[in-house]
Image (cartoon, rainbow, N blue to C red):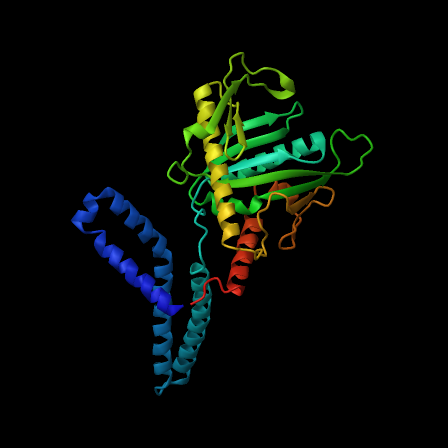
Length: 358
């Protein structure tokens, strides 16, 4: 581990020198590339330097302990030594986590799709609850949310809603939300007070640029149609809604949220790019034979990941066996406790599987 850290620190120092080179500054592409690498290494180098400082403090304290000291001074040195050794252990664990391979998509923004599953109107209402919860979560982080496509119902739910959350690192937090979310509650339409179980599917895709994936315009079939609202009423009389079919894969994306055909096309292309990128990534992962399932789960859309039980006021994440009795707070956007626990579980799993081998 420490050999790797030395190499990383040397590279960090090398980049630092190059960034002040006038020829590098003049080449903006090279400068941006180096700045990105520099900022990625900054945290781990800072932590490694902290580790080396604490190591020196321990060495100095041990030397001092060998000298003739009065009782009070000896006790003070022993206390400082114990504190430094505890700190060293903590930093060592933090370094192991920082050395874990990073998901290349972690820094990206996301496109999220929420679809009502089993349960009819009740599932659509819960899809609306989840959309509101993720929007509130994004708002609490000062992240920008934008609806890309939606199919609302008359009671205020969604058969489907597709939206983007723009922020650096949004994917690193929200990627764990992919899967089937189950809700257990008495629907407002239920006269007998019987508890119903419904499901909603969430898909989280990293948003990608043109650079990340190339789409041949000849592979696209683009159709226009009239946008319709809840209950089938027409939003407008012009054919502003867009349907894009990617012929080689059969993927179909629609967008009808904007009155402008151009804007709908732009939004549909954003969703299509992310879907094609995710398909390519999935294929690559399968080819690399990453057969081992993470303890945290596969992110498979068919995997039941969480249950929201209203009568008991609880939310249970089945991947890590975490139950929290704060359903109202969670559906008001307070996801951090669950997400932090999932990240910790994933890191523990990777460490246990030697993913940061020396």
